[in-house]
Length: 255
Image (tube, rainbow, N blue to C red; front, side):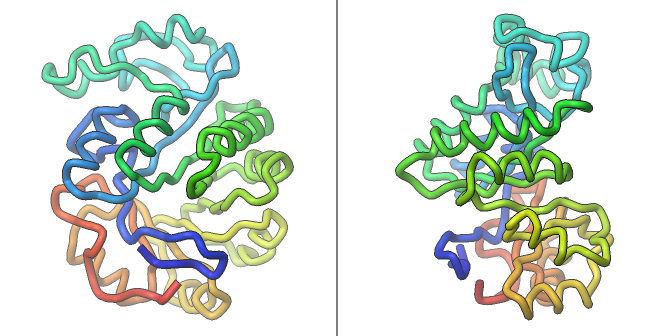
């Protein structure tokens, strides 16, 4: 964990979608496995149900990761509580449920896990999702270290910033755009996230010079992680939490 200029700590390794490759994605089972392996930080995606409740989910549709069909945004909370989020991953996880953001927050606090909450809005719901998730994050983590809240949607991040002025925000890109500093400044964002395969050394150097941590996804090779840390990358997201721990790699930038 590295202290940032604003005093909050940035872990070096995040378990991607809760537990990476070892559990059904975005489930409490993943959080439990990450904690048992000594991982100190997890990342997960959050979308809104038809009732406006934040749930841990990545896709706009239910089919890939659950036994349900249709759009998550059209499903009620009652329907989502009935879904099996584990059976498609492995029979051993049959009966695993889709968790709410509130349930995930409780598990993170129980196990001492730092969180990166990625706002994953359905098309047309960017502003609403950003505002609802930010308000809930502030309430759910009240009295403890706030999680990092990130998104590819700048609309969602602006909405989050409007309702939660002190929330740590991260800008997500595939390839970092030339005007990244201006975009981050407008959002009051603290961290810069990008695809590990597209990270640019000039961007990493520029970010380092102005105290902006660069986080890369999705890194499953410890040697690649070490190389990224040597280049100045501050943290990585990984599906192979069995191969990488929070102390993985060479010393990075002293955030």
